[in-house]
Length: 201
Length: 123
Image (cartoon, rainbow over the protein chains, first blue to last red):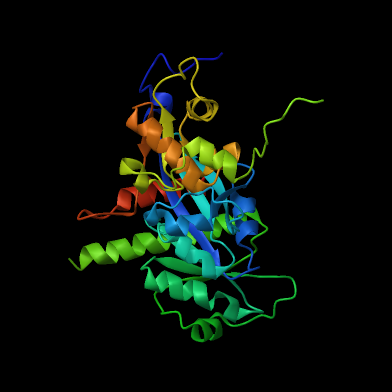
């Protein structure tokens, strides 16, 4: 058996690696998994949660026979930013009615990208409301599908009721560079908001 | 006559029930585990360590997120969290929560955002 690493506890190679996370939200079919897939260093994976989590506080047995379970999946990917910093991207479950399971999901996230399909704006209303409710800083990314009509961004901002300080960018979620640019837009937005917050103190 | 066989249901609830000894969620420090929390082994698995625990220790020689572990081991988050709570309590693994952009009381972390940005720009 290979024991490499165990004889040097706290060795620099893995000693100080940390993680940050960004959430990819949006309605069903807006391209969340596609974006995670295109920009991730690893083959995107899926982690699962079951509805039994909802009764976690009640100390119920989880093995009750014939209990029907609903599995909620979370697609995720990883980007190695440097030797000691990993960025994890999590696509939120498409069925927003299960988001209550992931109440802690946005906690500790740097921010979120809300993907919008301009052909079906309404499918992302719920995601935007959820970001506002949970106070998660976000940018809006318009995933441009081949048959998308060209909407002026201001028209979309108006329709989605997005305040002027929140960036809206267009992207092709299938394209790695384009998806990367969406993440860059989010981090720049976070920096700008942080700088503004520091100044106002 | 064939010997009686133990019912096997390796991917089902019975497996989870046995693995977690019937516990439905982690207690103590592991209840704050996040899907992006990194787990790092502090020791090699001792001989005779239960398979799933040994597997976690082997896979986390280099830091691995709870989400990745769950995907590799085929375990849902809440089940894995129970196992990790045991390992944390025994001091066999270390858990590092994701760095939030805003640390409580310390304001926005511009240096962190700068580090993330330059990492992304190198992609």
